[in-house]
Image (cartoon, rainbow, N blue to C red; front, side, top):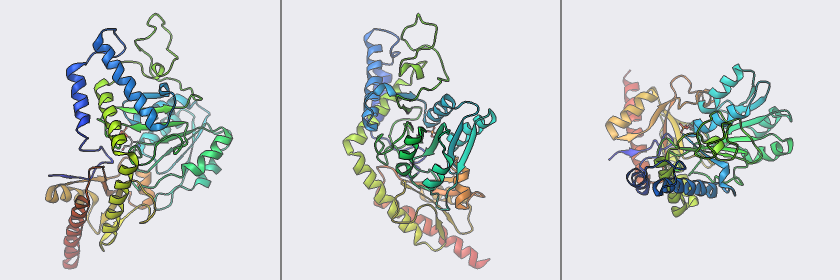
Length: 388
Ligand SMILES: Cc1ncc(COP(=O)(O)O)c(C=O)c1O
């Protein structure tokens, strides 16, 4: 059976209740939520409301109307960035962000938004002082990932956020990787907007995401259309969440996401996070003992997201990932992981790295088998090197 260690791309497998919830929706109440008063439309609207409430409770948000359903984290981040920033505004981000932040900001820069980039050290860590030095009182937004999908470094949000609040600068957190792996409530992640994707740590299906928008923030909605409410009004609807959710939502996906959040709550987010921590330190320790292998990101003993990027001697990352798949049935991901800046600071921009990322169902045996497989690949490489 495949050892799946590509959970930072999409978690797999899902808890059984997730496909069951998706199926239940498609089989039993696949009507349009909020677009009719018959019982199946009401059932669809109810599951959306329930998932919104579950997400609000996961994030420690009092009013679930401030949680908006999106397609994924990319959609959430685009809504936040394009909805808030106007020509002449200044935004601070970092060089290690995912393209889901970098590319919208580059597009906005072409339209006159000024973007400043905080640097990162070779382990992917951002200096909070540098972020604060760049974010003056005139800055419109600071946008940072909670955890890097490449180095696994955790952003110093707690050190940054109080000063930003004092200066009246909102903080947008890209929590695509941290949902389901770290505490994610608005107390632990003191943010004004939080973008999350459903298909990674939240254990939901692909095609659904969330954006928390604090009541103090008003975004220009990038999409207008039918909401099933106040249809006589041709102007855009201003009430939340409808304002940001024009068009029919992904009800089966949202039903599955609700089941994913239930799983996190039933198992306990703390317990899942502790398991992932244990597995990632086992992986890092195992890889660090291999002579021909370079592992990147925060050192052993430092907190990190449940993933490790590494390279093996003279082999390309693509070759190692292909051999892990072909010879050992281990799913990993090679390349730049949509975050070239994170590879630049680690010195791996040329060929990228191999990433192994952990989910709640990975066992010690999975990790040990993966380390043994990398050891075998690395030993072959060393033997070849000796012959050359
Ligand atoms: C840090 C980070 N931000 C944003 C995203 C985008 O997530 P999605 O593809 O679900 O929109 C990812 C996906 O890997 C990510 O790792």
